Image (cartoon, rainbow, N blue to C red):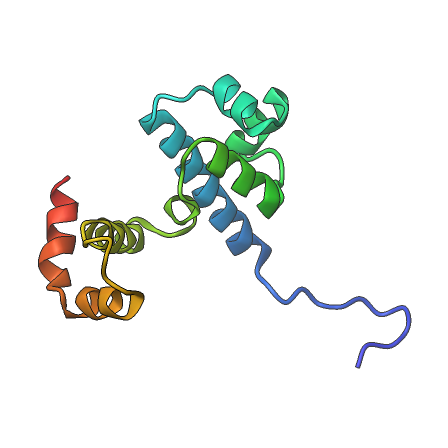
Length: 130
């Protein structure tokens, strides 16, 4: 128990938290660049100030999760693309691509069953080649 006047020790390693933030923001910059979206355009689409989006992309601001979601949604970037590392993001892209290719008329249980029965190793390997 913490007594009055005592400081609580940090529960996380701040260096690790800063490293994760840098990685996420670098992925955001990469996703915007890959789509040919400038910071000006990204900020206009997200209805956020250009300077704020610029500071976010450089890592000199601590954006809220809401701001990140706003930038991603406005610029058609899936949040998983910037939060997950590339192998995990590849898996999600493969599942989404497969699922989107299924007929519209099948119910959710059948869709899930087909997704679970699929040869994912081959699909993920194909995603790596893209």
